Image (cartoon, rainbow, N blue to C red):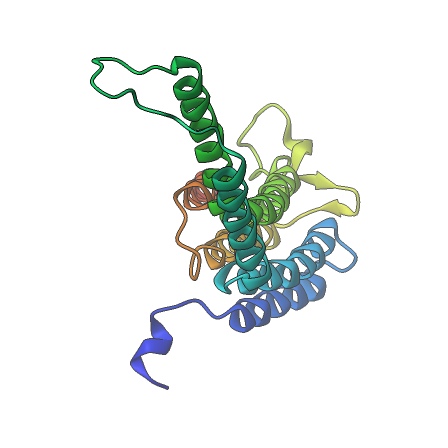
Length: 226
């Protein structure tokens, strides 16, 4: 392996880690809700990989479309725009209405051009936002699965909180369950980081940082239990 391969995340390796973690969860806790959450995270990982590839590639159809619209707009403005005539030997413009119309058209055209120039970025942001929303939701779902899993006696006098639908967990099993939760949260953060690996955008980066901060905070609360 080259050194550069250690400087970026590999979605296939993340999926392998998720699959191995799902298998460990199923072996230790058969038919558990946490195992199904791991399955959902694996499914979302495929969507993340597709989205990351989309974000990193240049969308030439959109760029060509925007370029043609801008060129067409400039041509139409040139052919249909009002003519401004300057008076000879005068100290002010003779056609104030034409000048105002030119400035109004220039302002509207500037906004339209700016929108077209940012069209590709806005479409990519929307795609990334949808995927990041799913990862954020899954992080909260993982947190819901660990809420009632407390070490015995931590919330006295309610020792039954360590009970699950399939019976009480032993301390080693409870520790492994909570550990699996932190692993799922960590991999959720890694999946979100894939989106900004090839797409340098401040808005998407801010959302990714929020998810990483969320997963780190949730993991910290779990580690307090462990």
